[in-house]
Image (cartoon, rainbow, N blue to C red; front, side, top):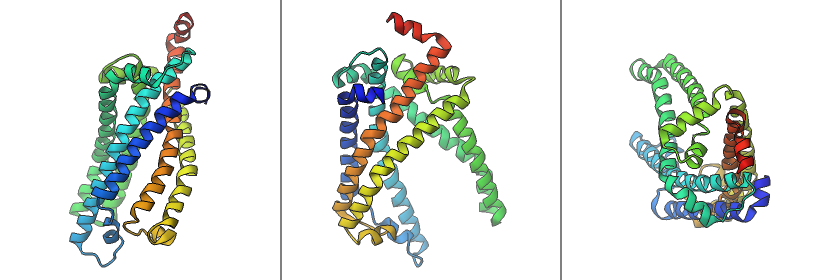
Amino acid sequence: VSTMRTHWRTVLGISLTVAIFTEIIVVLLQGLVLDNTSSDALNDPDATLSELADALTATTVNSGVIFLISLIGTVIATALLTTVTSRAVLGRPVTTREAWRDARPQVIKLFGLIVLLLLMVAGILLVAMLPGLLVTATAGGEGGVALTALGFLAGALVAVWLMVRFSLASPALMLEKQGIKKAMGRSTKLVNGSWWRVFGIQLLATVIANIVASIIVIPFTFLAATLSGDGVSGFLEGGGDLGWTFLVVSGVGSVIGSMITFPITAGVTVLLYIDQRIRREALDLELARA
């Protein structure tokens, strides 16, 4: 919060710029390219198996494209805000241009790190659920479903444990100019022995960010539904294409939400990384000398 207040022009400027560009691309893709009517078939009890398969495929593609665009925006915002927050610890201001110049060489590596972590999570969940899926496919019944659910729960626990261990890899990669493998190793070293503390702080930051985003995004979503298509009732019933009005108005809410949540999530991670280095490596003495 102190960083956001002291360097609000740079912090909010970066977050707003990234959020606007990201949301413009998402809205244009949803409005011009992506199929937004696939939910009609999914909500139709009389839909054929082929129609359901096509709708599910379209929904998966839509979600994947939007997720990829949002991921790119998150990576860029995280890279820039990491630099701003690290300079703020020393009481040094930094402009957006300076932050980009410092972060640019590591952006591709940061993107690779985040994609690698996402693939790890997906792989762990798939392996954990595979026995249940095989039982369900061959024998069917409630046993296979229960085994799949149990596998998902076990995989989720392992994934959370690993994600917390690697949660400080992004600031290590950005600030120490490390490679992906070394950054993950640095995160493991810093988190070792403090897993629960790091987990609690990251969880609290995530909850705060999501609550703030929801307070902003949900009213804009209902306002968008009121001004477009079949209204709020059509939106709640899972109606199909709600039109440009819905996309634009809800997009404004997403931009405002992202502008506030980007600094929270990125800033907490960077400060937690610095805090762990102070506790483990006496970084405070180095900072005092600097």
